[in-house]
Length: 366
Image (tube, rainbow, N blue to C red; front, side, top):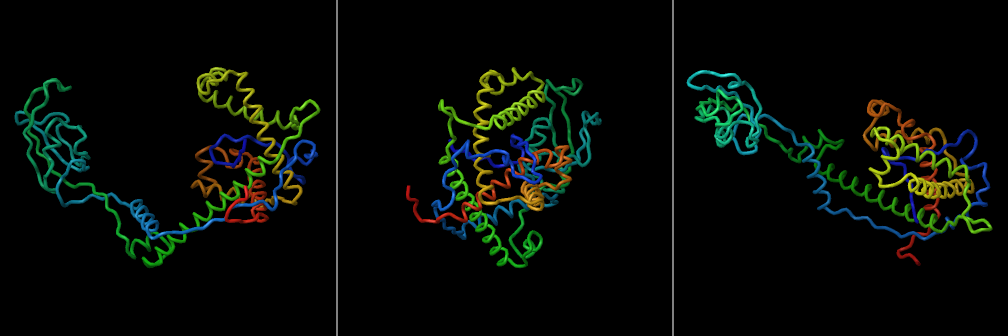
């Protein structure tokens, strides 16, 4: 089974418990006893071409304009169904005011059914800024019994109507919403953004292909009885971490672990333990490959790279360090796990190395 584990914010992460002080993870193991890592240099990877059309640029610009829509109170025009209007009204029964019959600067969406029958429909077509008299009748089953079935006269003034104003693509919009000054520069920048995005996706696809290739070609070694060999301590570690995560979820759901597994996953504890152990073996195989290659290729992770990775991850998900902590009551590092962050960086570096040493071809041999 090909499997690529990428660190994703808010995903369930399996913590990797090692020390990074002065040695790589798994440095205490002779990994060649457990796994035969497949060829990872000189692999073929398919080339890519990137094209950005004017249609794609225009679509992106249209999306940007839509995202910049502003809602404003407009004091001209006529009321239509679906409009949200600001009104002041005064209602009287037999010439007398009644509780709840009057209001100033009230917001009403026409067609919402908030008022009695005829009130909202009676405002359709009314000019904004004008007053309309509505001769209506409360329904016989109206909640306020003393008003039920009574005739009522409302004087309603439509003060304004909310309109969504979509900006026009011009220099004012460009200067306000980008670092460019002209429409031409803006279109050029959008085209470059789309190109960069497509290129990033294409490169990531190449890396993913290479990683999956190496993962599937790497074979776990077996003992004399034909059983796959794994560092037992690491399998137990990952299994324990995964189990603890699901136990935490059960606790948050105010359920016992047994009930949580049954209700949320349709599993018995025995079935869960079997699946958790199988998952742990997949994780350990991946870790063995990553750190075997990292060791052979002298790949290391510096503290600066570690910090930059956190900054990049926070930015990708729209957070600062402070806003993340405010939201999740933990730092990003504590929430995701320091060792998981290191693992993701090592994986990125291994993939970069593999792509750098790959043969880019128009058509794969196999």
